[in-house]
Amino acid sequence: QVQIVESGGGLVQPGGSLRLSCAASGSIKWITDMGWYRQAAGKERELVARILNTGTTNYMTSVKGRFTISRDSAMRTVYLQMNSLKPEDTAVYYCNANGRDFTGSFGSWGQGTQVTVSS
Image 1 (cartoon, rainbow, N blue to C red):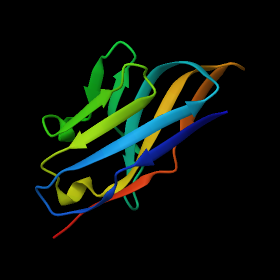
Image 2 (image 1 turned 180 degrees about the vertical axis):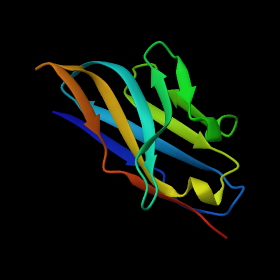
Image 3 (image 1 turned 90 degrees about the vertical axis):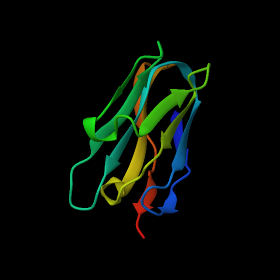
């Protein structure tokens, strides 16, 4: 079993910043990649940013230059630093991790954390 726990969401004014954290735990052998997705009300879930265990990152176009994904050296925790937040960034943010545990491959999701950008 692999558990994913997110934290750091909340209410922030436009132009403000938030930092999300995501911790993976359980019977993990290794993680190949971790990412942040978001789902706004009435919309489909979309990839925000992803980081590989090599350190390679990729971002959705609308957050480039504003958001930064990073990880710890053990590839068990990832962070999403969100700056210059806009109302359209409002969504539930989900963390995803993929890799192998002691039974095979896994792809796990957290419960999500709400980010609301509003004045």
